[in-house]
Amino acid sequence: MVVVGGGGGNAWAKEMTLRRRMSSIFNKTREHFPSLKDYNDYLEEVEDMSELSLHPCSYAARSWMQQLAGF
Image (cartoon, rainbow, N blue to C red; front, side, top):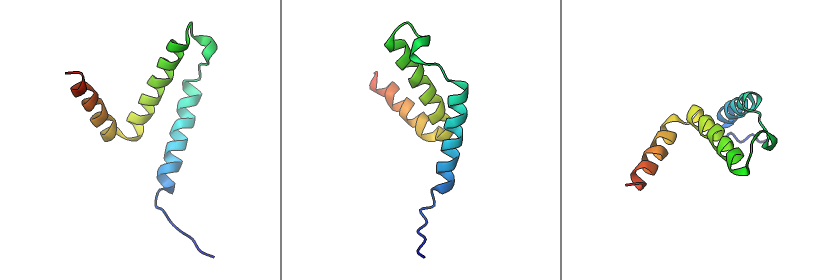
């Protein structure tokens, strides 16, 4: 038997646990919104919250780069 360890098993499990928890809290569907744009904005906000919880440094760096791009 050959076992190959990638070292990311715990990170994957942590991410899946967080995403399940987030989806149980933020569980609105397309029918809850007046437009597709509003629904997509909602999904993007939920994803941003997930990313911030999982990867605070990379989220902060991306946010900072987006602000710089606006100048």
